[in-house]
Amino acid sequence: MSVLVIAEHDNKNLKSSTLNTISAAEKLSEDIHLLILGNKIEDLAKSSKSIQLVKKVIICDHEKLENQIPELSSPIISNLAENYSHILAPSSTFGKNLLPRVSAQLDVTQISDIIGIESQDTFIRPIYAGNAISYVQTDQKINLMTVRPTSFEKCEEAGGDAALENITFIDSEVKTTFVNREVSKSDRPELGNARVVVSGGRGLENSDNFKLLYDLADKLNAAVGASRAAVDSGYIGNEYQVGQTGKMVAPELYIAIGISGAIQHLAGMKESKVIVAINKDLEAPIFNIADYGLSSDLFQAIPEIIKELDLLNQIES
Amino acid sequence: MKVLVAVKRVVDYKVQIRVKSDNSGVETQNVKMSVNPPDENAIEEAVKLKEQGLANEIVSVSIGDDKSQDVLRTSMAMGIDRSILVKSQNTLEPLAVAKTLKIIIDKEKPDLVLMGKQAIDDDSNQTGQILSALLNWPQGCFISNLKIENNKVFISREIDEGIENLETSLPAVLTCDLRLNTPRFASLPNIMKAKKKPLETIDIDTLGIDTSSKIKTLKVIEPPKRKAGIMVNDVKELVQKLKYEAKVI
Image (cartoon, rainbow over all chains, first blue to last red; front, side, top):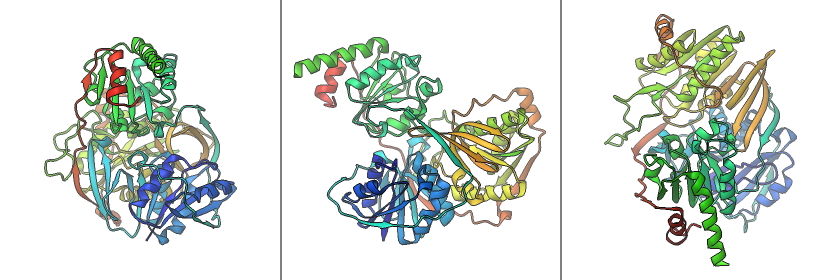
């Protein structure tokens, strides 16, 4: 049977989470279809056709789909469902907002945030903030799943030549209107996708001090993250939060600065390959999972790291 | 306006959970249990709406065994007027939870349903969305701000890119983020008063819905442990290790 992947995008480009989700779909079927619901997405559809693993790109292009209101997009997905054994969406706020509605419409139980695929009907997912790993099996007529992007590699974007199918927009009565999005612009890499993440916690003490962290991040070409405590304290926006109720990240290098390491934070970053913790409190739980710990005042340590990195660069050049 | 708040009883967020030795699940016996944290935000928001004169009745509902009375009493100590416990011995999946809530909602006819965006035990993040679809009411998920004026509902949702602002109308289903508000502590006099507030019990078997599990848990295991790391003495050593040992910079 075929597998349907719901694309996450901004009407111009696919989000990298879509590429991770396609890789997950590859473990289930060779016949992967990518569904793009959006507005003015002709170019996006064309570029998506070249994704090697995708056999067919299905698009529904309508002005009402511009802002991804789930009440409008979910019936379109449900309407296609009978052709598929599995429907996958990234486990981002986009997928979490959307796919459970399809679950209601199809009357099947969705499996959230899978991190592994054992077989066509057996999946692995974290529970209790990743403090336990659950193996679940289902024999439902169709499997709906959200996929944790960091658990699957990104698929190749080039080399393919998928078929393209246009489907008609089905209108639904919707009482919600989109007002706007407050999105912070940054030249730094995307948090969910960066090779290096530099994260700050309450130890930074205020939003001005986060500038120190930005300097270090820029030096390392890193994304910036934050603990819930730092976001709650208003030091930085919610889109930077790493943790159980924020973003899941798994970079090559995660540097936690002034973060104590609450269970909820660890849930979002403990799959990182190398973890560095800098904290003056030697008892901070973050040190229990760090590969390299430094007990030091962060206001001294950060400028020193920047200096050392500059020295290294000088030696190399 | 009448507000219904859905509340789940979960292992307290501060507890370091343990996987059962037979790998059948997570140990929940003799462990501190509490209101699911974002459900507390939902309770707080309902109480605030009543204090502002926007809500005239606020009701909480939970699905679970007799012990779930605790979390309903807590909600009433925070200011909820009355509670409903739908008694179920089995743990329900989100679809079954939403179907159960829909029956309670058809009976209670609230104008607004609030609940946490996800339960911190199974981390599914589904129930509000499913319920909204079943009721065909507007959905507002992961909200960190709510304003209701003349039947219009203005919400800010926390999304991966930042904040999304939407306008919708009642009735609606809204799921709450932890940043929506700061839940109040129940004072001792209010805890005493809550003991006298009405708590209705309904047996789930009388509702006539399929609540059987569609998903079988084969096993639950502990996550792989990270190998112990080292403490470095200074920044110089740290940068050297990252460069030449871990080779990540």
